[in-house]
Image (cartoon, rainbow over all chains, first blue to last red; front, top):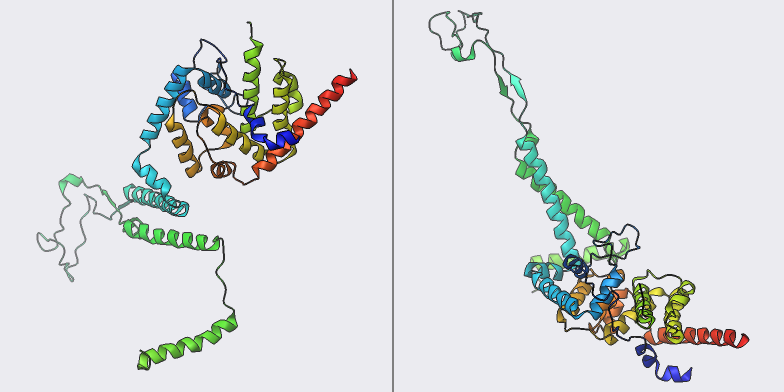
Length: 240
Length: 151
């Protein structure tokens, strides 16, 4: 036992002996399979719900093959180099941001998207149509000889205006004025946005790890006159 | 199909080690015969000691020790500097999990203990884990000696 304790790492090194021959000599996993392996999409064969791309190769088999097959190992190394180069600068920057800021940005972008979509759909919706009272083609407009309406174009005294021929005597529906929530939608976005922002700040405040030291009511009351005195002395110029 | 037991034995043992890391390993009692298929009882006992330690103590500690071992001592077949960079990048972003790792993904990455602790999600005393594993190995060896002397 003492011998092992004095040189315990060598006990472990003996275990890590490199493999010499691949599990399936002469057979190689497909490129798609190696790609899935590099990207971590190849799962263990017996994991619940796992479905490998190529049922003939398990994750361990691909790993052991890559440990022994130089060609496949080179291919995997090249794929990893490409994968590393594909990581764009903005992604790096995004992941370097503190987690809290990323969470904030994510929430706000989602909120903005939802609000924008809701408002756009409201504006895009056709407004309800209403029918205006109109004059049927066969009827004559009653004229009041006592109170002539200035807005009416009279062709002559007590002669009503005929509706245009294009109307054909029928009343066409006209779009009703939009309700207030379907207009000024940008304003609504910012209103709700501010609300969401406020809720998020409250949420963060409630979940903060270390609560701020609370001032007792007595401390607060004692501090109030002192602050008032300080302010007064500044105001009257007794303090620099 | 003919199998060469001298090459199959190490493959099985390394596969078992990989499953210990991913925590998809079978109970050690069920693995005893398979691990010593090539007749190398000592190597089989060593890996079984890992398996028993994983079940007896905190499994993440044993998994962490294995990660360190393969990361630092298993020689990579080809030079692949992007492997270590990608692994460290994933560690920084916390997008890598132990159940996604393989011996090939670890070999030659030379993770230090801080990175291993980050990967495992907890800190532990590696020397203590090593001692425990060796103690279990000694236990297994003693049991085998007793059973062989009775025969």
